[in-house]
Image (cartoon, rainbow, N blue to C red; front, side):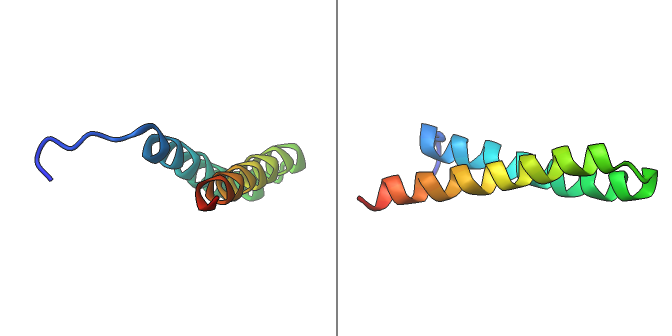
Length: 62
């Protein structure tokens, strides 16, 4: 384990997880601010990150 680096696939999953986490947190901010526009963008970011993760997973399985 020592000196192990992240391969591009793990890095991609990390970035997608960060996008999903920020989107979920921003939905809370949108609710607090009563902003439908922010909430819509956050849902798009969340759905997009989940869809890309699903596509990556399907690509790995083949």
